[in-house]
Length: 430
Image 1 (tube, rainbow, N blue to C red):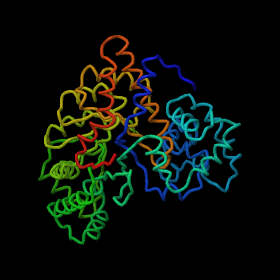
Image 2: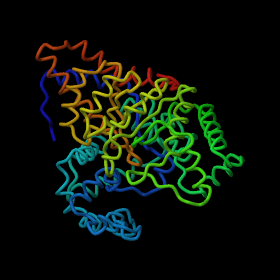
Image 3: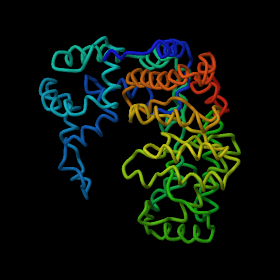
Image 4: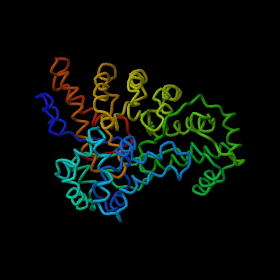
């Protein structure tokens, strides 16, 4: 895995190695959650690579399941059953690993094995020693050792669902529980949590504002939601949907049914968050039926709420060109390259080249690992990000389109200055 770099690419890699980083998107749980399991080599396959494993045939019987029981992925879950000897789990895993190990999801794992654990590759000869080293590293302080010491990440925006987390994690909170109530029981849970009766749409709006005010007081710099089809809010239609919900009729979300309650509440809560200078982070593209989360749905939403700033996560992959044009044209939409490098380095390299042609350089945030438990894979992912950017900028330098100092200036913007300028509530100490 010794990639050959041009002299210019090597210089850019060296320059980026000296840069501090704002990590704009993780799902990392508090460190004690990570430490609570006896991880082995399979921690490296606990996020994202699992999708390639399923695509390669693992648990094929669960594909297209219509019930939760049918959807259980027994083969994959058995990899994390520590009562089964490691050798048996590896034997089950190996045929699928041979099918996926050349992809970019897998490359992040292989780089991490090499860079963090000193193991050249993941194979029959190394999985046991790699497991031993992973267990040895899984001790208090692992987040700081990985994020701060190895990656120079000063702050990591974590979609962790709670605010009581330690630096470098900084919480970004999902707004879904108050803008997407599906059942009356969820309204009752909100009533209990906020000690407030919810008998009307205005009551629900009041609870939502209290939630956002609470998050603001706790230093939360942003909220997060997934983009979907939306229309200009209709108060009357939302009132009708709220009555249906309170009468015990569950609401349905997705392409099969448009719910005006969700549509109304989403806009109102984004407006409230903007009052507190919170960014709205938006998942776009890759995930399940990605047609439902097209970045193009953001056009109408961002246009309706010009006072809000939106960080478009994942550049809408695979719809990167649509995402680029949106970032080019809408001043309140910023382009987040989170997750993209491990989806496809080739696709994001082409997209970065096109962004440099089209998008002001203050509109782009370079990195987010987007991992949940496997903090160490951020090392491999960040390396892939820098490698991709070195390739694009190096080619432009060698062609005479930009000089080296200009490239380094832009890269520093993307890794550091731009995230801090966008997430204005984020306070960092260097």
